[in-house]
Amino acid sequence: VSFGEISLDTNSRTLSAHGQRLDIPARELSVLETLLMRAGKVVSKQSIIQSLAAFDDDLSANAVEQYVSRLRRRLAPFGLTVRTARGLGYYLDRSEG
Image (cartoon, rainbow, N blue to C red):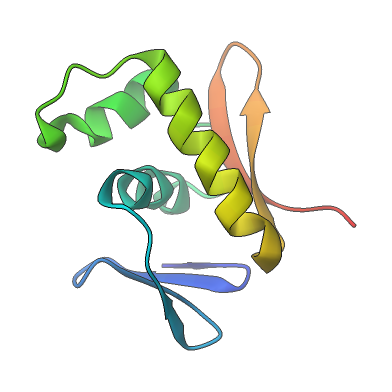
């Protein structure tokens, strides 16, 4: 799955940009995968929490906000951002400027 400058191999769960592998923590990768699979569409916090259910934690909305914040910093150099749709969730988008 590709969006902008990044690509995710869903079989090997490897993220790359410009042919170079990017290492990010598993939970952030799961959040990013959920957003990539629905690129340009709003994904609810609840859907993101469900995508992280395999980690066997009782996740809160605050935890999701932390993962999204970290992803924003990681994706910025590649011209991507995670935008907030207030009251609805998040979506992956290309950064402006």
